[in-house]
Length: 373
Image 1 (cartoon, one colour):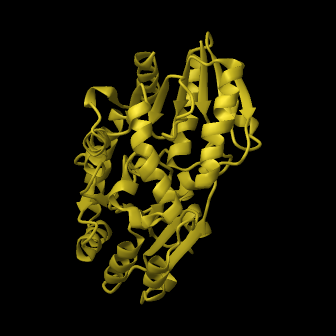
Image 2 (cartoon, rainbow, N blue to C red):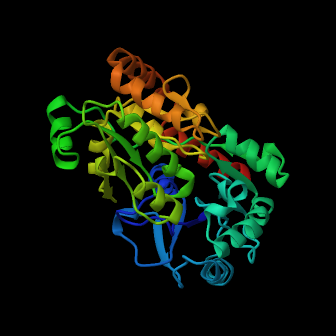
């Protein structure tokens, strides 16, 4: 069988949540199914690390698809043209983008519909493309995979899709996310936070990550903090809006905030395992992989009580109202002042993390592909 795969988000040292999903699942699926030929479609020069097995044929198509007009050129012209040459049996798209100009059966992985609920968080042209095309992608797909029961319900209701057409394939956490001994944790803090304890955020600095309220909550927390605890943020400033910038500039304790920028996977795992707690208080997530990564590192979690996050966190995190600064600040205070409570959260996280793995994700995604066929 010939399986075409959209791998344009497999970017070395630049894997976001969707890219990580693609990397982890495709690595497993291609190894488990050597009887099939996989065509990996990139929109730029690819890194050889993503050619996991000998049954993968990499294909680079132009143009680089990072703008709505270029999305159309890549998915509606370049991709169908190459499909005519190889005649794939199915097209798997881990980022949900499909080609409407081809009759090849397709599986779309639609992670969430944030852009439908908070359109103001996305640039105008991208917003118009998403809102115009994703309903059509959802209808065209032979099957849809998504990463939580919340997202399944949201896709079904928003796009009027039969829920039986949608499969839930939870995310997992990478094997590098493990607890670290005290000495290594202190070395990490010496390197990144001047030796101080810190609350940790990881992710693209995007409006839906709720950085405005995170900054305000940290400011409120610091008014009663005698331990020099810092806020450390790792991630690229791809969506650093005026609102986020202004909230940061108005902080009383902004000198206690550290931006690392994008870090390596190894540094990320060390930062997660060395944190006082993960502060992941987005107002919308399809899953929230950092929550699970924190559980694997024995790091307590503060997260939101909205969308998919309670589903992923279970009873192993402090659930806050992401629109309430005092709710987030109160969770920080609880973590900082109550070591026994921290240990209780860590123990609960050790249990909750057993429910998720990339092996299960890959198996369920493959099941989805087979159902589509």
